[in-house]
Image (cartoon, rainbow, N blue to C red; front, side):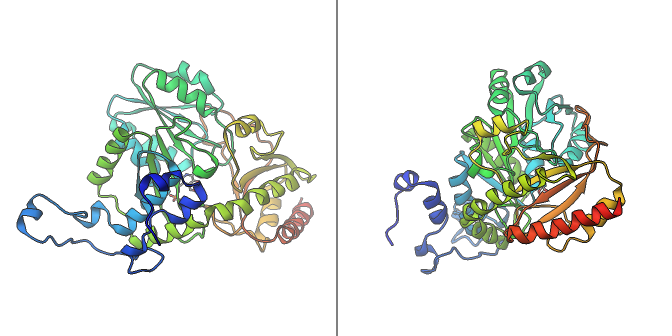
Length: 396
Ligand SMILES: Cc1ncc(COP(=O)(O)O)c(C=O)c1O
């Protein structure tokens, strides 16, 4: 197999690059995949090299070949200047804040942010002297009205956690960049395959790789891609200073997941949309929150900017007692009740975001449930849910 030049590689289409990135059989004893390299200590050939730290790898916390193989694939997908990886999606959310915010800065955060990210903003950033303001995810260009002279960055997440509000990322980017403000985005839902965040100007693009990248609910990992070399340098410096490193096994498993992610999403996107439409037709359901559905408030933005959808969405039931929801969910046999998503298996989770949103007032009248659609046969999933709705009706 002849090795491609970097420029020839860059000309290839995304699927081909995903099959090739980060592997070179010549470096892997001829095997297809890169080996799992474990190690803390790196041995230098002589004192001169040691004193100058003249080596491709200098110490285990600075990276290693397995992690670099993953990063090569991530850079291919993200199209940014460079990526760092860390041991959870949550850390991939908080690390860019540590890398870019300083005491005295003001930080704007969408009200629909992933809740543990919000906890960090509430509990840690104020201790660092950073002022946090939550804003309505629908703000668009009006975000500029919230800018202060010390606003340093805007946090976006589209669609939002649990309630799936779309955000006008190009409008937010235009307003922010006009005032020298950074835009950070949790792009986990769409993945770079369905939303090219750097192309739309997002400065730091975050993935909970735990979800669709790893794809099998067996790895915790986060990735942050920087749009420019300067931002990458800043991000990488904080990453190194904190000593954030992932296990090579996790890098290997995530790289393995990425090779087939587009195939899984090709199956899961229509599955999610079909199930969302199925829920929308149910008499027990008041609302479905899925931006790919034409009557969703975020549909136009989704259609304009995104090239696909993952299989996570939510529903609002018509008002029923909590015990009826319990009867429905507890008896499901194909939907697990657990946090996270993006694996091959289906999940269902009750949530209530009314208690902690501060910039918006969720207007739900009935209970809300988040669904993740896996790779099971949809007719089996519908049968399971049909029986669940029968239990819900019986318990009312
Ligand atoms: C939107 C979003 N971002 C970040 C995370 C955090 O990922 P992890 O579970 O790997 O910490 C999650 C986890 O559910 C999430 O849903």
